[in-house]
Image (tube, rainbow over all chains, first blue to last red; front, top):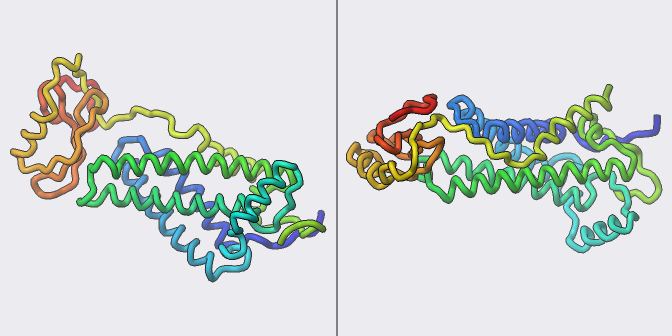
Length: 183
Length: 98
């Protein structure tokens, strides 16, 4: 067994899998017009918003690899990484790689926007307002598309670096840095 | 074991991929025939206004008119009406005759 390092802290992992569960539950209940399904859809939306609030705070005060400052890279760095990726010469990152980091930001933003628009759609003021309903649906669909992209990125990166990243998000551990890796 | 868990996690997440499959699962369906026999939405709006409702949106769903409104007590309601008779359709009804 090769050496491993702790990368993803427990709170980050719980937040990740709670979001997975809420987004999955929101997707399942989205078009089921039963009162119970509607109520469930509403509450998983609130749960996702709460997790996101927690994750945003954790991104400032949490451990190193949870911090946005650690993994949100500049456009130039991200573009450089994308170029290296196309040339099959991208380095392995201990935390999120630049594209993965932006995927995190985009997933958080879209989940928050979907949750907030859903919340709006059940207030007296915006109940039954067409553009709010349509915005919520569009944000939901964009989120599912991005989830697919995120998964493709995870599978691809796992394969490229011979490291099970889904497992890493469960255990919090990744292979110890090797020469050429970026911290 | 851990690999199996991660495979299950991945498979669960993979359920997202088929985007938003169109699932027509209305709260009710109406046996409402051809559209020519339907009463206009405006008439339903006027009728509900007289009841003290504030109508926000009327959609078609399962052959019924689906109404989003605030009722006379100011409560948010989503209600179904038969397009031919404009009679309320209880949620859960299938092929309601109106």
